[in-house]
Length: 104
Image (cartoon, rainbow, N blue to C red; front, side, top):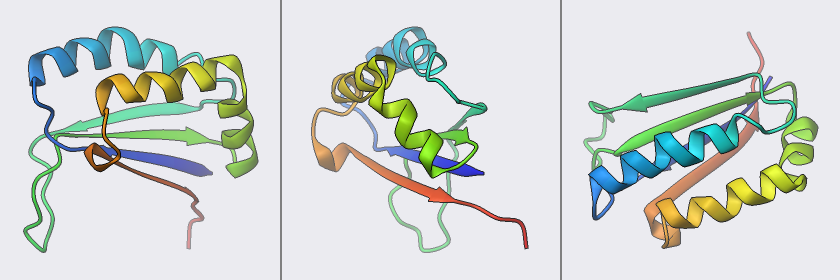
């Protein structure tokens, strides 16, 4: 199963971020073709190294990386990618990781 992890830093206006994320972005992302599951983690989000605490982590699940890529090539995927700029206007405001995961 492939995952897309999106890690957001603390926004300038947390209330506006939350309203947009949950009222606009999540419903938009849930229309991605092939999306199997969408999880959100909110504070506390801790790191063993004591790095700055992320504000929110979104985890999207797809069957494989090919399905993830196909999803983001659709109009829904392009709209999601564009909407991410509303939530995190600067590239430093967000980190994204896309990967296949296998049980061992």
